[in-house]
Length: 329
Image (tube, rainbow, N blue to C red; front, top):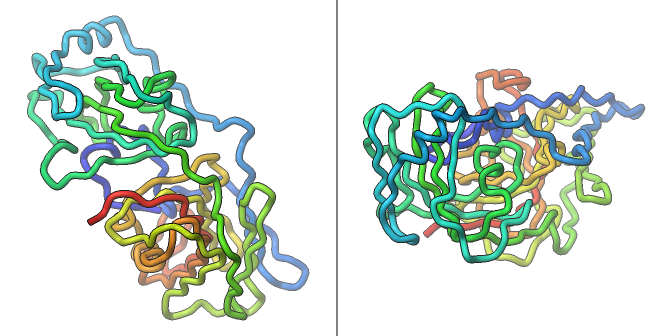
């Protein structure tokens, strides 16, 4: 799913593929069942999530990052100084302060604060310590966040990490990242089954919770958003200003699977108000732990714009497991 990004964490996601519909899946379109119904089954996750290794920094890169000065105590915005311009040939990091909390574990929801400094002139670009800012979250081990996964491997809550890297816009940036917390989240929706309205796409779950969606023959795309609870969780209600952690699968009405967190082997964490309108409207008010079927008309998705493998004016079908929600008013 394409989403609006901030200047901070999104810049740390090397080649981020977190866009639900903007990231075209390599899954081949599923064949239609003999009944004429379209069946959408996301590809199985690899035994081990595969990620491209990060390039190795040069000795000059390491020396440049070692020379960066960091002042200030953990828990508050640090002062980061260096002689600009600062460039690196590969992402380069060092641990400024080891953490003293619990070990970071793959699959955990990790919350961080950070300050980003422009490599060109040493000026602050963005800070998660600014007034009104909430910590940002990501799923530790998510292949989209190798710039954080690799240097934080084996680290603990409380770690402060210095990272110099080049963003997708070509600009160099120095980030001081502090791990504020980490918590376990459920792997799938858990709660009471809800009988859906008749005539909607149906969902069957594999043993691990991955959904297979069947779109009935002759199913006509709705003109209004469909948000059907399939499993009702017992957690707090989600609000549109929160960051949600979800497992999801997305399909077209012809049974084409265009994206799936299940296929990538890691949940996604994103601010709900930075996702397409159909998600923001369809998940607001749902409870943590719930599974929700969304059928999204084009105007609440991508409208008349093509997005990756999604044609223009496409209705979208999603099955979303809400694992957690943080932040908000």
